Length: 99
Image 1: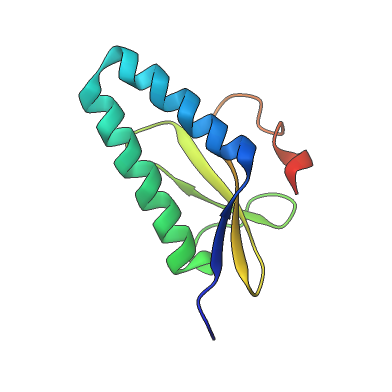
Image 2: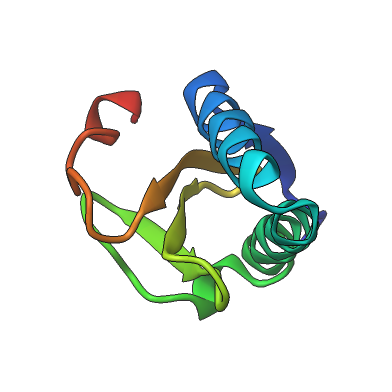
């Protein structure tokens, strides 16, 4: 099987940028750790997408260990689509219209 393509929903990219700005205002170290952890979660989703827990509406998610965030994604035979980088306890269903 050939590798899956990675796509990131524009709203998910906006969420990462907004969170990065928030962390950057508070601590450059936290901002750097945030970028590393989000990138690692995305890499994990792309590397072995079926490994991570099923979530809702046919999606899966990877938690970031140092931040209260979930990288929520949808898998097809040809791609992994990052739908949201969502805070784990805020408005859990807001991203569902991105499918």
